[in-house]
Image 1 (cartoon, rainbow over the protein chains, first blue to last red):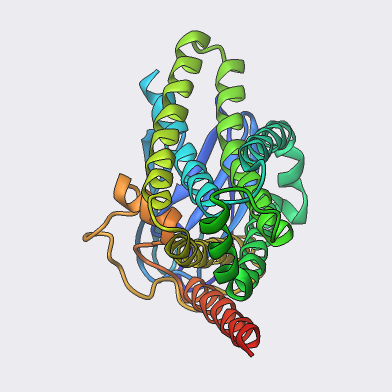
Image 2 (tube, rainbow over the protein chains, first blue to last red):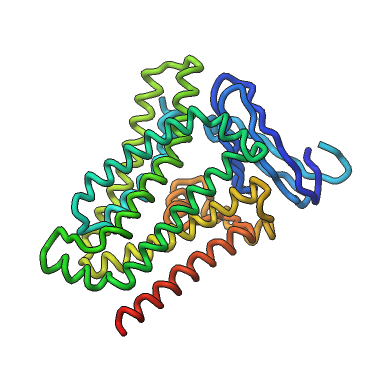
Amino acid sequence: VVPLGQKFRLVVVNEGAEPAEFESFVLHRELAVPPHSEAVLFIGPLSAGEYEFIDDFHPASRGILQASAGRAP
Amino acid sequence: MLASALVVFRESVEAALVIGLILGATRGVRGRGACVAAAIAAGATGAAIVALLMGRIAATFAGSGQAVFEAAILLSAVFLIGWHNVWMARHGRDLARRIKGVGGDVGLGIKPRTALFAVAAAAVLREGSEVALFLFGMSASGVDGASLWTGALIGIAGGAILGILLYQGIVRLSPGRLFRATGWLLLLLAAGMASQAASFLNQADLLPAIRESLWDSSALIPGNGLLGTLLKTLVGYTPNPSGLQFVFYAATIIVISTLSRIAQRSARA
C-alpha cells in the first residue's frame, strides 16, 4: 500500500542471489537491481487504484502497488 | 534456458532494430560494416563494465543514478540523430545521386553519418548492460551455466533476425527513397528515445510527470507483447504515455523536422 496523491520514494531491495528488474508498464518504471542490493525510484502522485509491477528478469513474479487514502506505506 | 532466451531476446530486439536501421541509413559510407561491428563491440564492452558497476552507478544521484545514466545515453543518441537528420536534409539528395552514379562507396558526409555508429553503440550499451547484469548475476547465483548461455545465444539470434529483416526491408529501396525512409524512421526513433528519457528523468524525480497517463491503449496493443516491443523501439509506442513523455516526444519531432526544413531550404537557395 502506497500513499495517495503525493510523490513518494520507493526503495527496491533485492534480497535474492539473482539479479532482478523492477518494471511497471502502468507506471513507466524500469530499474535493474543487482543481487543483494537496493535501488531507489520515485513514483506518483498517484490516484487511487492498483498498479501492477513485475520482475522483468523473472516474469512470473509480479506484485501490485495499491494506492489508497489514509494509510502510510 | 527458455527463461534466459526470452529475457535476452526482449533486450536484444531493441538494439538489433536500431542497428538494422542504422546500417540502412549509413548506406554508402565506406567501411560501415566494420564500423557497425566496432560499435557493437564497444557497446558490449561498455555494457559489461556498466553491469559490473551497476551498484556504484545506482548509488549516485541519491540512489537514482541508473535512471539518470539511462536518460543521458538516450538524450545523447537523440542529439546525434537530430544532427544526422538535419545534415541529410541539406545533403541527402546529392548523396543519393552520387550513390546511384558510383554505385557504392562515397566519402561524402563522413561526419554526421558516422555519428550514427555512436547511436548503435549506445543502443547496445543500454540494452546490453541489462543483459549482462542478468547473465552475470544468474551465473554467479549458481544456475546451470550451459543452459543459461545457450538461452542467451538463442535470444540474441532471435533479436538479430528481426534486425536483419528490417535492414533487408529498407535497403531494397532506391537510394533517394532509402534516405527519406530512414530519415523518417530515425526521427521517430529519436522521439521515442526522448520519451523514454523523459520517463527516466521523472523516475529520478528530476522532472514532473505532468499527468501520469494521457490515454491507455494497452487493451489494443499491450506494451509488453512482441508488437508492442517492436513499436516501442521503432516509434516510441507507449500504451499509456505520461504528459511529460508526450511533451518530449512532440518537441523532438518539431525541433528536428523544423531544423531539417530550414537546412533544406538553405541548400536550395
